Image: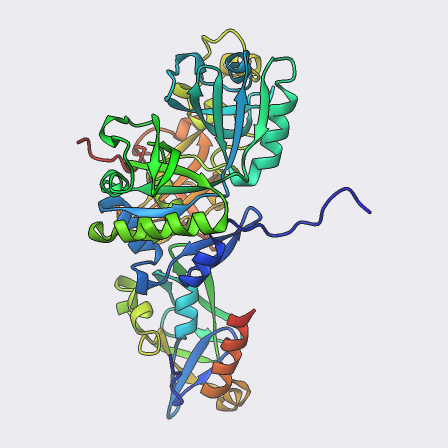
Length: 380
Length: 129
């Protein structure tokens, strides 16, 4: 017998619900996930995307992982393994951060939630669950702090869009108007006591992510209650297709695309989440050296100026046709109604308005460097 | 969705409708459904030579890029320019949205293609997997 298990496709507790709803399913990072729902339910990537920009959409994001760190030295442990400054977090507050390798590249990006005095919850990506947990556990052994993998304990549902707060408020006794962006609260949701709700998401829109017990019955019950309560707001179930186009419009990085174990923090442009004033964290020394040596390539936003759609992995060319970089994510942007992309290019090409080209099926197609994020939600 | 019996189908999900020596080519309803929201149709120019079984263009949805395979050999005589500005018409009416018209080089090539009934059976099996 081998100790290594054969790769099996994993399913969230809502898998049967998605299939029953007629969702188109795809494999994503080892998970069987809905990519879009049928048009009869208001679905289709464009409709789902627009629902989140203008109303409300819900996503099953249970494939995301959760790591809890608790104990006397939990803060010191979190500070050691993450690049943002967790000492600034009040209880109930969350921050975007990343776990780095000693060379300053990414293990993963994470949301760090401070749930209690000495209790933190890291929400991590699906494709890097095991890698992240092992890495966190192995790099926090010197601290008086318990590390638990809670990834299978929760069904995580994201309720996203300008109407998300109105929808969720119908189902909970917690006062959501008092919960600011990137803060969490607890309350009864659909009768489930002490449910964690974070005002977070991956859509560049207002919204919440809720964490409910991962048994199939409870998960399906909550999912359906949300759809019923959301009817008056035109709620639409959304799949990974819309999740990707929404995050791309907001320039939110995706592991394996904008960030990876070969891309460092400066290249990815995530400087403001990396607190070099912290005396120590894994990756800090390498980042200091990298900054002193000069950052050679950078992530830019592109908009196609000629007919064509840039896709992940396509080559980026200068106007002379010389290969200078590559597309990390590219797609039609349903809300902006443009073809947009993110790309790594040498810094001499980072200036706004710089004309570039993308090689699409052997043809050089015009593009231009534009400001990012491509989409910013209107301030209330 | 019933597949019209006035045309033939490929296993790559194109249809071809013959009218005398000319034929219209498009993609099937099953294809548009699998692709999702179609945002881009790229077809060859008038005069281009197509070869049966070879790619002759591209159709893109928000999520995916897919090649178009020619059901038969021939010369492009007309391109449906409406699809350049309204590619979503392929979603709403796949069997009415022809992409190119060609003059057939060898009409007997069509004998190897699927009838509507056979295609329907074929996609039912494919969807079942």
